[in-house]
Amino acid sequence: MFTVVLLTSPTALSLEPSLVESVRNAWGGGDAAWLAPDEAAEFEIPEMPSNLWQVWESCQAMRVDLLVLPTAHRRKKMLLADMDSTMIQQECIDELAEEAGVGARVKDITERAMNGELDFDGALRARVGLLKGLDSSVIDKVLAERITYMPGGRTLLATMKANGAYAALVSGGFTAFTAHVATELGFDENRANGLLIKDGVLTGEVGLPILGRQAKVDALEEITGRLGIGDCDVIAVGDGANDLGMLTRAGMGVALHAKPSVAAQCSLRINHGDLTALLFVQGYAKDEFQT
Image (cartoon, rainbow, N blue to C red):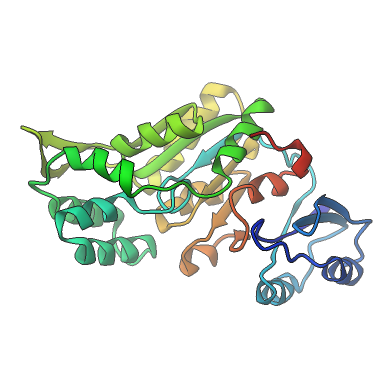
């Protein structure tokens, strides 16, 4: 059996019962259950529909996300999350670059790297090199003034942890940011790259080894092994090319507001919902959300 989930943005409640019924009837689904009024609904179907992506495109035009996933084992025991443009709304290296006066150059490299056009390791080295000489105190300034959290993140973490899940933040960004974000949101651990600092300024070099695409897969393997759970017990979320390894490896990989080239390789895509969509996908109703 498969479960169909339709959801929309919690700030623009626009999920019409007529749309839910139309899709349910077309795919021979069971009775619809509303996880949140006007925001999220689900129903079961016996098999994966052959016209999934045509219907998905029609729903996208109505600002509705449509996901189809196996009904069994929906609630996951572990969250594995990217940070930049996933748990926070910015790319931390781009914000540092703005302070260093090289914002446009770094942003262009970041965009190309996240689209998979550039080798991640080389792109990271090039961007960090442009930050050479930046006072390390700018990191705290960026955290305080430039970083904002993706809506729904606190609720996602609180709800999954209240139900016994483990949460790990794995980023191609920097530990100075992941440590802060992990503490603020309630992650159990965080992994990222180190910015090398000498005499209070950035050296323009990144600590080795670089945490890139494979390192995120390695984190999934190491943490699940330590917890005694399987890949099938993990929900992973990210938006960039360096997230694809963990997104395709996890039992449930969700591309959240992802780059088109990344979303195209993922079967679960959230373009309109916020991070609480990951709870709806797991079958949580809104009255089960923790804050």
